[in-house]
Length: 618
Image 1 (tube, helix red, strand yellow):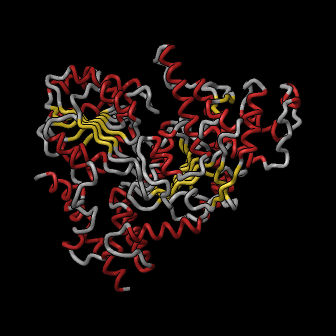
Image 2 (tube, helix red, strand yellow; image 1 turned 90 degrees about the vertical axis):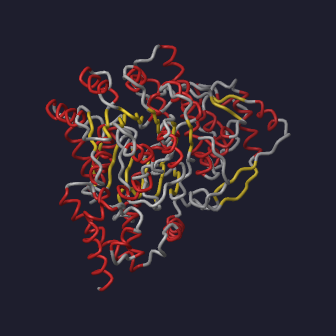
Image 3 (cartoon, one colour; image 1 turned 135 degrees about the vertical axis):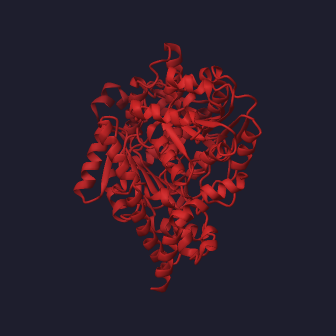
């Protein structure tokens, strides 16, 4: 078989997505690659397809047990023999898997980086024909990445000990230019083809809110999306427990995940989510890497994460099937303080020396600042994300809260002057909240202790709503009319641009919302329907198609329970939507549906055809 036959037979697709074919061709030619592709862009196919064409074994180095189990399960379900080697196996299971691997049973083997330097695995690897090494979540090798893992540093040493060097492919969803360079260097890639497929995912809707009652926002959202699966991310274990308990009390089917739970409970809860027994997961960032659940329709960040890389990776777990999905971030000022504490007292980089750890902390503070700016901006949220990763597009996406909100341009030059003068006259010694309280005329112990009641700007804007003052200060920080120090105190400092405002050489105009609508849900639903219809190759998703889809989904759940696999392993939501619209009547038409390959048709095709026939006749 050639690459196209492999793609259709095992994976059910007729053509490759952007970037996939170029990376596959390079690997088949023996050239190293680095693929930076957004979540849902099909990174795994870039090494799975060549693995089935190359002679010998492909080793996939993966950081998490859940990721390995998920991908191995999907491959076996598609008719590809694959295995994983990690700490979840008993010694007997591990030896049996190695025995089968030596016998050439598996073209693809997933392995944890910690296993690479063990004697038993090294003995196998040095005597096996390893044709390719694929490094998944490759950003973990970089200490400048958001998930640095010292165990990834073992990969280059492992490859040196093999009898011959295989071709190497490195893959990640989120990597700045600095992290990309680090991946190439640390993995010792040989003149690699570096391909960035683009970070934009048009199917995702982005919103940032700063509500007084975060839980009320979440409950309201879940009330109107009861049929959907989603993830709610929290910064701390305590918040996970609180949110999960309240949602259960309010009648929602939810589960939880954080590092404080036992291994057994974490695994059970994860399975409940993946198998749709509990469609909503409340979790810390310990959950999600490698979870290939395609029908996640929303990701809500209950609190702001510590950097854009983490945010986009976590938010990107929504809509992996390409269908519309929502990414909502609930922001509060306390989130910054919590993340600062994690940066100062985190245990992530204990293996680094003091100098390197200090550099990483400084970088982390800078990334937290840029994450905070994302929560401030009134410009297109998608454009902000893309610009962070080095891409530039239009300044209007039409599918984020800011683009769907009515703004008016307001001249705030006088407020800006007061803010800059307040920072200057107090010797640039205080932070954001002290400045805002001073301008608003707050009579607190801290303001009196700092002598800010004597500041010439004290109470100058006491009648201006506090949220508008914060909005102006956020704008000044975002556009470098002011800056904050890159340490835990975040003192407000003047910049070269400050003088232009103070001397009247530059006026400040900002966009302010005309109405305090936090989440224009009806607008988003209309947009979503348009996108859902335009994204289908077979026609418009009508009410009739929706009814057929629900029947197909019920059949999929029945099959998933029979085979004890996650429902999306049978067919993705997107494939069921296409079946509902295209209504195939025979094998040829069914095989023309994207996501239906020859192997899966033999397993499930006739049952779905019968269901479609019954649904269209009723």
